[in-house]
View 1 (cartoon, one colour):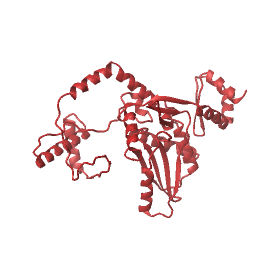
View 2 (view 1 turned 90 degrees about the horizontal axis):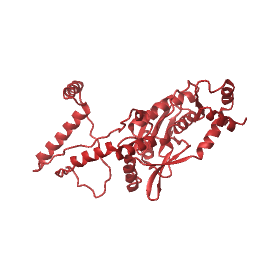
View 3 (view 1 turned 45 degrees about the horizontal axis):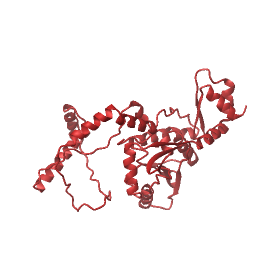
View 4 (view 1 turned 30 degrees about the vertical axis):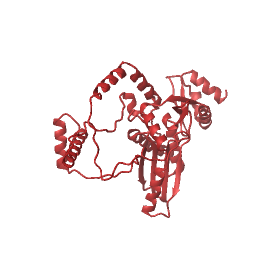
Length: 356
């Protein structure tokens, strides 16, 4: 029997076959996979992976964008060179890095969640997710051996700001900046249409387990993703078009119907005609004792420390405005980030669910 025939037979027996990088994975009902079939799969692992990858390369699925993705796609069309919606993580690595193993680990990541193989194309004037059955990991290795700290930092920042082409893809990439065999910076960078902070942490955790496997360590025991971002988009659409969505629409229409005073945020410079997203951060620390008192206050009020501090910053903003102007108008709400994972199944989705 040919390997292609073996794959077809196993799938008819209910055996699920898939690959992650150069590793062949399978799941089967009890007793469905014979000892002979197991031995054949082990002996022909590379050839089976190649056949599965070849088959998946021809598979392309189109799905609508979620509401959050639509807004991010629109922002990208307006400012395609902006890095404002890049989500990144950089870490210093003070050990030797096996780039072959790292590349294989990244390939295993690409082979897992479909969102890492998704691009965004326009069909009949409407943006759609184009979900490829197979994709290739991107690892750029930069020689930073002749650069000082400031020059290397500038190189990393330039790489971080390099724009993504949402239509051509890929929408995430990894870069390794090497100064010496034991001095590196690893940068993982993605467009926010694909990943948020939560899913980036999940991705890093999987990479942490996949890399040792590729260097001869124990096998990475990662559960196969059972849900995808396309599932999330479908759930969201069904919810918003159903009774719960109509109830939410009625609530917010009533909530936002009341007249609201316009609040002009005070700044040191006039507001530009076009948003530049250039800004600054003021960092400060709160000592341990004050932190403890704030935590007690938040608990007594039945809220979180985050909500407490947010309400305090809003009050300070209003007080500052009142002291500098004659206006008594003050903001009635503030925008914050949200993970938007209402289902337990979405808590482990390796995808972008924020502001969904």
